[in-house]
Structures are given as structure tokens and as C-alpha cells.
Length: 95
Image (cartoon, rainbow, N blue to C red; front, side, top):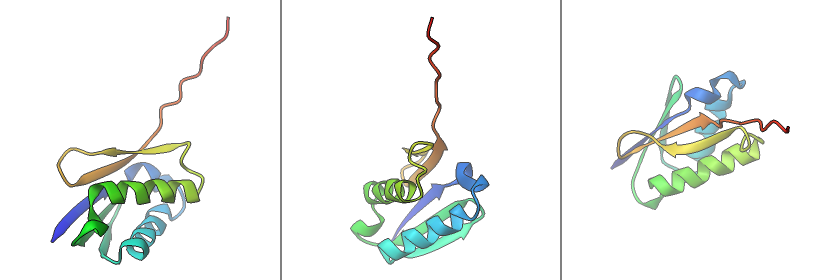
């Protein structure tokens, strides 16, 4: 059984987004999904809990709630972990 952890600490400020994200993952993967604060744990077998597939699902979730311009998904430290972080936006000043 594979266990993936997804750190959604950055989107905690959005109203109920972590819970909505956990429900979205559970619906799409039909795996066991546990939400502990801002960390979501996905347990299951097969390609439904592969790191690449969960990354794609996370991007779809962010796009669905129009958060894709604000947040991005990166591989977190460790083999079975993902992290949602806020994008750094640089403003270019014109001379």
C-alpha cells in the first residue's frame, strides 16, 4: 500500500479549501483520504495514488477553483510527498 502526503499549508487561508481538496482527491482516486490539519494523506494501491497522477489532480483542483495563477504544486522533501505553495510574483518596473 502506497502512502502519499500532500502539504496544503499555503491554501489554509481560503475558506474550507483543504477540506474541499481532500474530498476532490477522494472522489477522483477512490483511495483512503485522511485530512489532518493542513496535511492530506492518501493511501491506496495502483496508479490512482501515483505521485504524477496526484500532481495532475492537484493542478485540476487549483484550476477548478481558479487558484492556478496563485499556487503551484512541487515535489516535497521525501519520495512520497507533494506540496502546494504560493507562486512568487515579480513585478517588472518600466523605466
